[in-house]
Amino acid sequence: MAARFVQIYLPENQIEILETILLRHTRRFWRETVPGSQEKYTCLVQQRYTERLLADLADAFSNIPSFAAYVAKLEAVMPPVEETPATELRLCEDLSPPTRLERFFSRDRLSTDELYDDIAASLHLRPSFMLTVTLSAIIAGLGMQSGQVAVVIGAMIIAPLLGPTMGLALAATVGNGRFAKQSAATLIVGCVLAVLAGVVIGMTVAIDPLAPELKSRTLVQPSDIALALACGASGVLAFSRGASLALVGVMIAVALVPPLTAAGIYSGAGFPGAGFSALFLFALNLVCVNVAGIVMFLVQGLPPKSWRMTSGVILVWVLLLVMLASMMVGHIFIGLGSWETLTDFPVPRN
Image 1 (cartoon, rainbow, N blue to C red):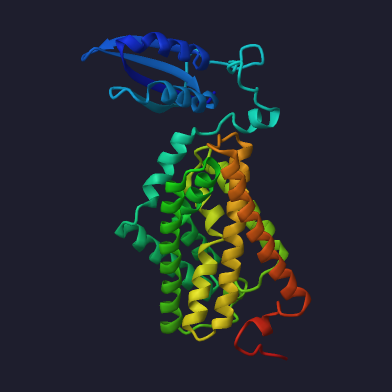
Image 2: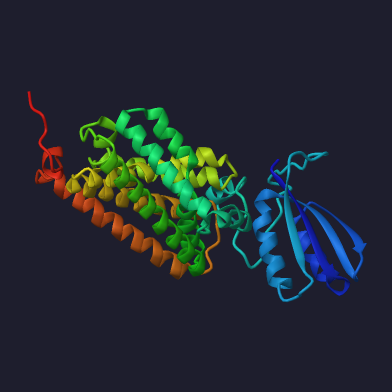
């Protein structure tokens, strides 16, 4: 059973309210007195109930200066706490019970606070972040130019854009404007650095513009939409369950880092048309990843602060997706989607 170990510190005069909350959300809890007229409660909480426990604690005690809550992951619990329909902890009477789909997907999901903590550290524009983005783009660019797929995958594992991308989807889901601005700013800086790294490669390295790994980043097909949607959905699903960041990074980076680097390489090598095509693929992938990510967060029961705000953001992303997809279809049907018309160099013919 996935469980969390929660420690709560409160003044003694608040314990009656606290115990009422704990009875609704926890299986077991223990109390002890600590110095400073504080009471310490240690709770065993199933992972799926951590979200609503922390929300109730924040509502009840966030205005108390000495209040604190700490959450840790448990590897094992003895005796085990098994959950069956008969022992399932009930919601408050004023809340509707979760749907079967929400109950299924939210069973092993991290709480919103844990997701914030996992993402927040990667949203700061530190020298290490900028250097990581640059090196990742260089590795991806040289790997695409030489046709070494394993090297390209290695660049994806570094996953410097994972945090900002997940941050955008998470902020849109819960309606956190400040978090969205921070994620967007970090993502923009990372994208610019990746393109610039590609430009340097294109200007300093002999480039074969028809190299398969590079060429594939300029051809936008309907299958690319399906790929990006799958990357976004699977990445969020794995990320929200605490999967390896390297695994999640590969899922997300496959749609973002290579097209950005390819755009820079082609622009630096003197093929701006091909560079624009790679940027178009990146834009399409970014929109798809966010649409799929927001939907997957909602399916897992992540609670929006305002459904009106979240719905509005989803609508904007969906409209962008429809617009880009329409442009792609138009290019394909009127003949502009071919390699010859989207690039600036002649294609060798037999």
